[in-house]
Image 1 (cartoon, rainbow, N blue to C red):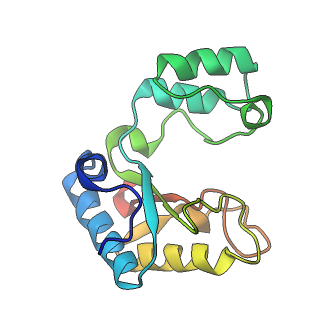
Image 2: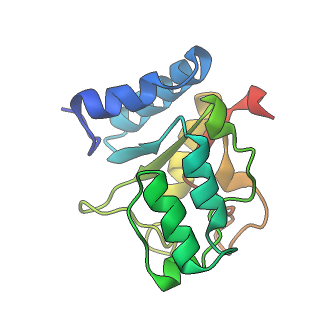
Image 3: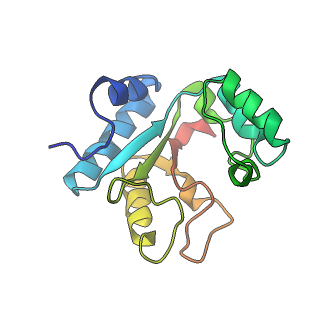
Length: 162
């Protein structure tokens, strides 16, 4: 029984958008998660420039402009609090070239976005398994939080992406 919350063609299609080497490493990672009986979701792989522009605007532009970019990119509109949050550091994301994936744990049908004492070990396990599969983990990137997890914990990329 699969332990991901995205099933069938939807998830398969996301992974198939990755370049072949990154796809191979992500498949190893996902198999390791399933072997550990861990639930996960593959949120994003290849990203369009329109999506990147919308993400980059968050925390930098007025909410109306952010939501205009999000609508243009086919994304849902967001509220004031989320609009103030910076979610990407660059316009040159490796998601644009198909060598990165955002993969998150799922607990009780929800993504534990706030890393806290009750889920930090789960995020660290995800990171370790991703690294063992040969991926670079965004959870190692400074600044690290009090649990030793960096600012982009959902992010995994090919080591050749840098």
